[in-house]
Image (cartoon, rainbow, N blue to C red):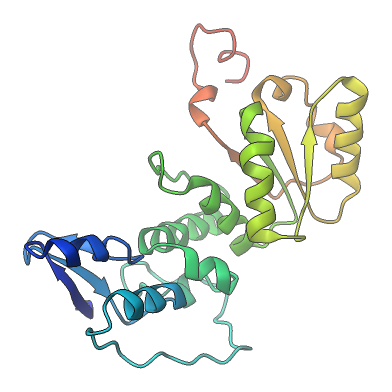
Length: 240
C-alpha cells in the first residue's frame, strides 16, 4: 500500500532537520535521506506543528468527521488499514491526537489481541510511552475495573497524575497501601466503586487476596514487569 507522505526536511538541511524532529509523527527515511510525514491521517497536533514550523509545505485539506460517527468495534487487519479511526474506534479524540503513529498501530494490535485472546504483550522500550499506552488501551477497551501493579514510588508520582490527566473522572484511583485495615478499606472501596483502578505495589501484591476485591477485574497492567521474573532474589520468586 502506497503511503501518502510529504517531505519535511532533507538530511543536509540542518535547521529544517531540527524543526522536523519537533513535529509529532515524522520519521527518517534512509532511502531518500529525508524526514517524512504521513499526511492522510494527520492529527490536530501534527497539523498545528506543521503549519507553525513549515508554512511552506502544502498540506491536504483537513478531513471532516461526523461527531456522532463511530466505526464498528472490530479492528480490521493491521496490514490492510492503518487508520486510527478503524483500529481504535473507542479512543477519545484528545488521546488519539496525542499518540504517535507507532503507538496507534501497536495499540490497535494490542487491543485486537486482547479482545480475541484475553491477553497480550506489548514490548515497548523505556521512554516510548508505556503509561499513556496502558491508559489508552483501558479507554479503548472500555474497562470498568482494572488493577495496576507497579513500584510503590510510581503510584502517586506517575500513575495517579497520568490517569487524572488523560481520563479525568472516568475511574476512581485507589491506592492500596498502609496497614491491614487501610488495605482492607482500599479493597472495599474498589469493590464498591462502579469504575475504578487499584494501584498495588509489588510488596503489597503478596498481601492481596483477589477475593477481597469482590468484583470482576477487566484488566491487569503490570508495570516494570521484570519484577515478576523467576529467580533467587527474595522479591522475585514469591511473585512468580
